[in-house]
Figure: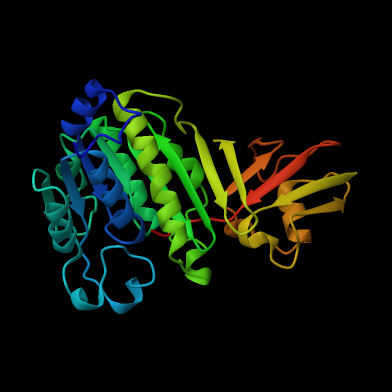
Length: 224
Length: 73
């Protein structure tokens, strides 16, 4: 039995594309931990993870990579440790730094796709700018309480400028926090989007935003 | 005229999923003020499901949708 036998939605050619794709995950917290897990398990082997933070106790309610025995440890190094165990063939580049205007272009250079798993709005816009300059697709995801959103930004779209048009620095997550299940849900949609872009399949959320409300079980796909 | 305002996420707290407001020459900014939502608290504003402006005058049967910012990760 091969490890990708159950990846029936992807042809051998798709799997070759995925195995040779370079993916950068920016943010290694609630969203980033799940995105990394799903990206690695599906067969992507060249992954860069970016985060300047270490784990603390408040991460344990939702961040897949956090454990009581790794509190205080560097998030991206813990990420590398887990994925190296999952797939020894994986090449994980751990960037222990916060992304900003000074390093964004260098970090994402050469990637086939970038996943936005950040936790603040101004840096998401910095990441969008860098992706635009490097001509790289960006899959945005964000969460707050019962709610989440996903959109796929292709070069030239500048979708996040319309999603965050009022100059917010943070969203409603500052009031309602982030539970365990919302990041897993939103990360799944982000990974699905990334895989569709990489293998050129199906329809993406380009120029649309999926707004998810798990409290009232509503999913809205809005043109934006 | 009566305008339907569709609310999403935390904007529903204490208000419900939608409210109907009777107003002359309604604009999104005036409607939001009426229901106690600050312009700065809105991330996405749609009129009839499409990107809208805060100072746009609405017509009979138009509906407004407002979403707060979601930014966590």
